[in-house]
Image (cartoon, rainbow, N blue to C red; front, top):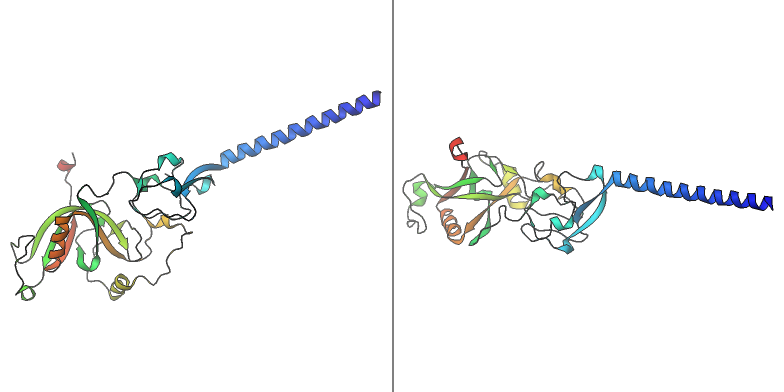
Length: 262
């Protein structure tokens, strides 16, 4: 009887020890997972978020990601991104950065639309960045080339050199692969390689969807700058379309003084 009791006590002790060890292991694993992993919002499999298209529930998923792999400013809650729009394309598996999502930033206002123009028709006068407020000029062709052309119908020609058309905001800068880039610097005459890239696209292999293309936005474009976009009214677009037949469009950043900033 005593042996049976002792055996029963040992068995119960063994089971309690095993249960305690299992519970402790699960607790430690849960604590480690909580410290090493965190939820982050990514683009769902088979989905691609296009610029200025509202984000829906089907576009995104909430996944557990290693802390070291989560980018600063990544969305951690699906509700925080639904209905917002991206200022650039976001591809399958990419994290959604809140700085790239907006409800109003650089979206066309009522009565406007997004128009993009190739750099073959535009000459940057200053370093241009997406979001800059700019002045748009037309630099006239030589008088010998303008002879025989009628007077402009959509704007007034007051001198023989250049004409200020209107002010606008730079809404997009894209490279020849169609990827959004951050800044565009003025340059002299374009090189043959540049012109070839504008017309035929870069010979560099485009990035695949699985690659971390979000790093291109402010760091490294995939190709040469090729297109700039503006939010324009129909009338402004007509003005630019006509002005391009009279000369080259010139775009320069509006310098803000300390008095204007205050």
